[in-house]
Amino acid sequence: MEQLRCETRLPPGMPGVAQNLRHRFEAWSRAFHRSGLAEGHLGILLYTVAQISWSRLTGWPVLEETEDLIEVTRAAIVPAIGFALAGLRRHRDDQAAFAGHALEMARLVGGMIRSARAEQAAEEGADEEDAASAAFSLLLDFDDEEPDTIATAPTGRSRVLEESGHGYRVYTTRYDRKVDAGTLVRKALLREYRERLDRRIAEQGVNLGRLAHQLTAVLAVPRRDGWSFGEEQGRIDGRRLAQLISSPAERRLFRLEQYKMEADCVVSFLVDCSGSMKAHIEAVTMMIDILVRALEMAGVATEVLGFTTGAWNGGRARLDWLARGRPRNPGRLNEVCHMVFKDADRSWRRARADIAALFKADLFREGVDGEAVDWACSRLLARGEARRILIVVSDGSPMDGATGQANDPYYLDNHLKEVVARHEAMRDVEVLGIGVGLDLSPITAAVWRRTCPDRSIRRCSPRSCN
Image (cartoon, rainbow, N blue to C red; front, side, top):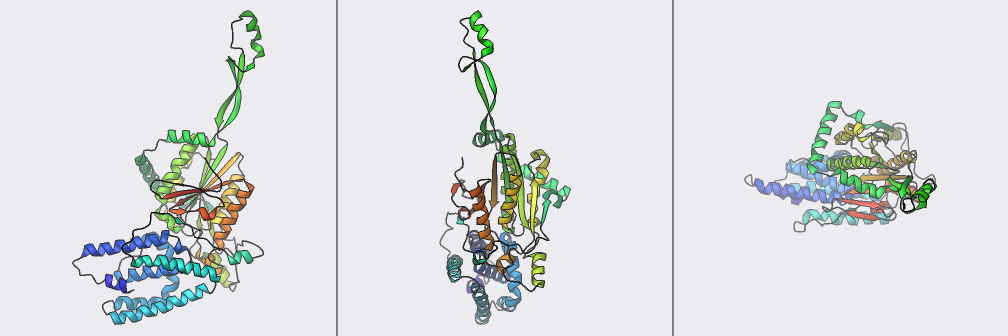
């Protein structure tokens, strides 16, 4: 707090220094968020306190990239720390008075931390506190550059899920829904999104024909396609034996089995539509649109799906739980929303406008990944293709504030790992993952990784893939 106070007392004639300080704080914010430590209770609490304190003292808005992520926590803690927060700004020119309000805020936040840790297993809480504290110290470290590594998705054990005799639970499915994403966006706005997407893709100069050829080589398998007659070797063609009598020098008396490459395959893209993905969605949408077009040229059926929640912090499902007296361990406590941007029976040309609906920012809320993966797999299993591939695109572990608070922080995370492990054991669907700035290897049992040159995307698979 004292560091932030000093940073706000710059002379008016030094705007460049002010911009540098702002840039440094935003860089630290992104580093902390992308490390995955903001996924836990302690990490998100410390991060939210830093953001709102900095915003209050400087007058600048909180980091837009993570504004949706901290919204629920901010709404929960501001009533408790609001008086101390107002005192920080009011007395930023008086160090002694400022210190009193800073210590009061520290006392209140410390109480929240102790309350949250009391609900966790001792070893899990200690690990989280050590990791979050170490990363939080980046705020004071001005010399070290950000490491050139990709953060790993945080994970741990869910005590509630392990002790439950019924496994994963859903408190209510009353408010769950499945929608066609194109119906959630006005047609005029959808056209604007599509035009914007087309311009961005055209700037990339991707050779779709070459990409389709490469995908055909990976996904297609040879299928018998009749016979090739008039060959000089192979099996004797009985219909041409008469030629051997009439023309003894004739050698084209054989036939060969003819094969063609055919992709008996369906690929489904499942996009994490949580709040933090808004910062990456333009690049993700471009990638998916290009791959869908290339796969279609290769003869592969595709679909594009998304998952989010109907509301922040539980919505109507949580209100029902509160009205019933908050029973213990309610399970998933939010209203899920599964979206279809393109189904496997529609061509890219017919679905191209709906794919652009991924640009709609207010579709992005929280994410219940395990149920979404199960839903996407069930759609693939209803198809007749021999090979089924599900590609999940995400930038973090499952995140639903209401479910995490009512159960434990790793409840949804452990359910996701169970779902992936089950489909891997059944070998009915190949579940792959593209982590946007995140290594998804903790989610899969065995990992194959591939990193792009700018180190922004990592791809993981439970089994080796060509």
